[in-house]
Image 1 (cartoon, rainbow, N blue to C red):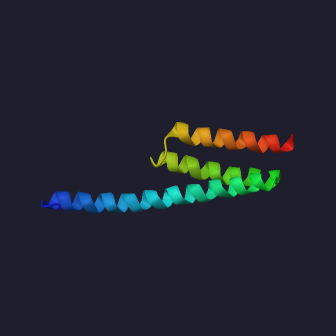
Image 2 (cartoon, rainbow, N blue to C red; image 1 turned 90 degrees about the horizontal axis):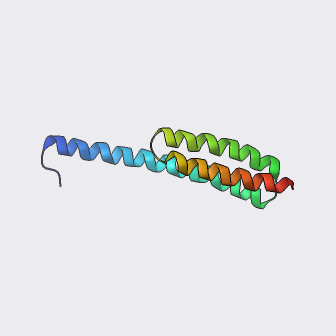
Image 3 (cartoon, rainbow, N blue to C red; image 1 turned 30 degrees about the horizontal axis):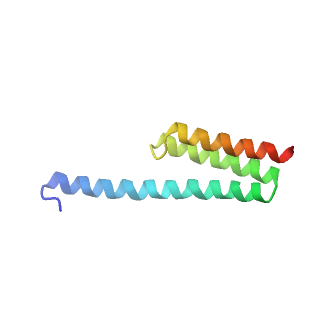
Amino acid sequence: MANTTSAKKATRKIARKTAINKARRTRVRGCLRKVEEAIAAADQAAASEALRIAQSELMRAVSKGVFHKNTASRKVSRLSKRIKALSA
């Protein structure tokens, strides 16, 4: 347990940031799940729209430091590749 005042404050700040980051990560995962479901249903229009929303959420999470930029780019790239394959 923290003893000094500054350490107690740091603990509170860390707990608050952890909760915020957890919520952001959950929101991104939900968006990615919607894309996956649309791909599984072979609905290209719905998948494209879901990907657009998911990409926005991913990049917002990157800007907040929740995900690494390359991780987000990789996820978007792989999903868009799968959506493109639906039309073929």
